[in-house]
Image 1 (cartoon, rainbow, N blue to C red):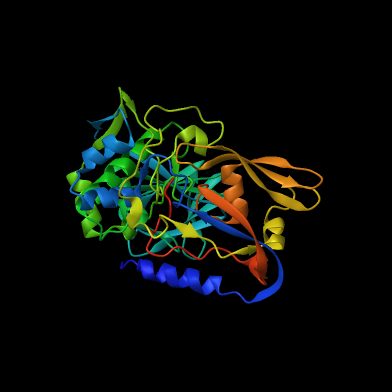
Image 2 (cartoon, rainbow, N blue to C red; image 1 turned 90 degrees about the horizontal axis):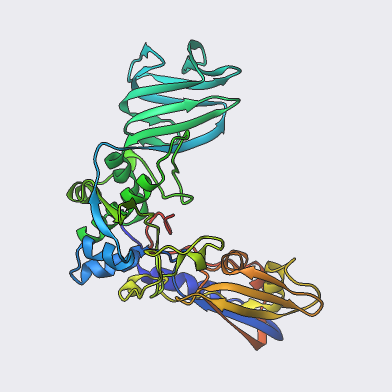
Length: 390
């Protein structure tokens, strides 16, 4: 995979900013820093550290203060791949539900009233599997989705809940190229491997699954996404995890910090402070194309439309009530002529379509953009494919 250049993002921003002008009025200039929640390690910050000669161990100590590296082996992670479908088709397995299979043939796990049935590709039932069915061999290919190490477990109950039970190292191999660029320096890839491995292990519990395969946890693409460079980084850091005292750390990370990471309680309202998830300076995040960003100017009506329901009457402005250490917005008040409401920084960022909650606003008078009310920020260029991580 070849990353798109930072210049591509600049061209996209410029193109969207060239909106025909209309009548005089107020418009909003919205600027900010970073991409993602900003807690823990920033991927671009680790890239910058690597280019300045830092090791992955030094990066872990910087982003997760007071932690140390530990070692584990022989662990597994259960990853939710899909939920809600009536049947899932797979191939390259050699056994399922007590039956020997032909690896070159396709089979299905189908939901039944009593659990799961193993079927051939045409839908003919070969055997009942009970409440759940397990396929082994492979790596197993799930049609329309990907190829995975380990085992596939299909849980029934009206629909199929498909889970990949995979060794911790195999899981890490599927995460790293899905969250950062394989072309990055080895120390940055190893830092990502340690953070991804630790994050996955911290989520392990006794339920049907431990983690999602998307940004609700961290992006996991399975064996089909693996690359030689990222696998080398996983092997070089094999078994290494981050620990705080004797506990496995929850190693949150995001794409770009904007120059300063954020404390967890400021980014996720209701979360308790965590000693090793405090905001710290991130001196080398500047390589990110979204280290500093600016949205296309928005008309007053465009901003009012995005914030609809948060104020009454005419929109008067947004008053920042509290910022975190980064300084991302923790709370703000959307002020209307007849009523106002308090919102979190993450909700405000979601409403406005910004890349993070590190936002600064300015209202100006002049010619407002005609189509600003429907303008969305451009798709990020030259960013890791995971676009922010957990």
